Length: 221
Image 1 (cartoon, one colour):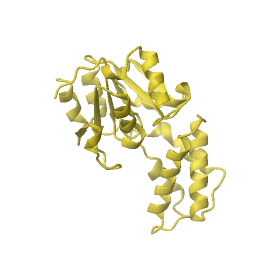
Image 2: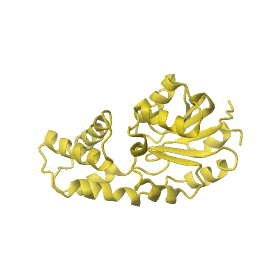
Image 3: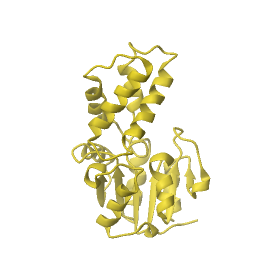
Image 4: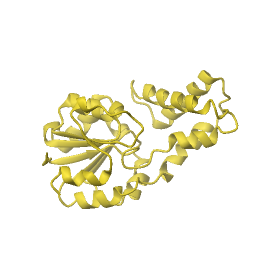
């Protein structure tokens, strides 16, 4: 099926930019967490990050700091004051997934590109610069005063664009943060880029892509 959205919105970290929070934490805690316990430790860190964004907005640094502290407590691991800063400061260095830049550049002349990211106003420009493509708009959780998966984040985007979900496509590699909410809100189309870090759930009416280079075909490009 070919879609003709007025805008196409993207999640940034994990979808466009290779989200390396887990690998960064693995290196940081390599001398404190035994190898056989590392997967469970990283799973806890990931789960606590999700839990941290479900309430009232707080700076992303606080999300990371609280999540790593809670993971350390749960696993009996020493948490240093410098851990959260090391994790946070790594974010601007992360690079796009393969083929992302080329795909965005191919779509941009035909459909305006938008980012809706669980990021900060002063943090996201570094990642957008890595993506190179011309974005119509970039919105952050800080500006929306809410993180995805909360609907408030998406509603902020709709208000800024003057466009409802029925005229938009949303693209993400995450059901938990993006596509479940996008389904509830009634997006015209939803594309799931399967990067292997979340299970597939076609019941949410997504187009499952195993390669980002399949995205332009959904737009008839």
